[in-house]
Figure (cartoon, rainbow over the protein chains, first blue to last red):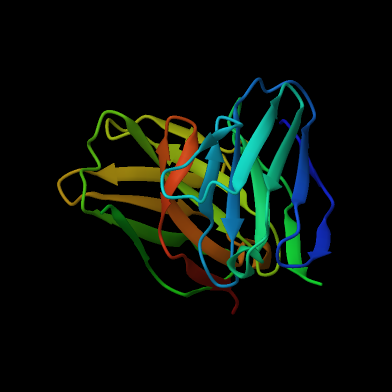
Length: 106
Length: 118
């Protein structure tokens, strides 16, 4: 299995902050990397697919980058509705998810 | 708008088989472009991929669960189903069904909590 790690595991930020979350794969996964947002009691929501493509309807403040083993999700200006847990997911081989990064209010 | 809805018992006894169904509305499960999958999330923990199925019946399972999992499809009802055998308390989780478009999960059900307890 390809193992996914995320850092940090949690962070505190303020509205308007620029937030960066990192995801690392245990081996190269090319660009087969997706990002999801999950709020308490809700299903995950797709934000970014293929490492850097913005899913339809997702605000442009969300962006993704990277290839190979290292990937980044960036929120350019954090909004109140962005406080949530973020997961990366690889689809290069059997699907695996990262452990998540919880973004809460500072 | 595509919608997915999980259904099934919320309580299963240890050693028995967990059975869930996902009903797809607003689109056809027989679309050639998509697989349909199951994902679970233990309370307070992260997401785990269970497996997926194509409308033709072709399946892919998480190797860690493969010996206990069966996913099937009923195109006449626009549904697909999950069976997980020999459950233990470790199988207690919210179970989600989702559409697998190319390599990403773009539509999800709301999730259903299944508790394994006697």
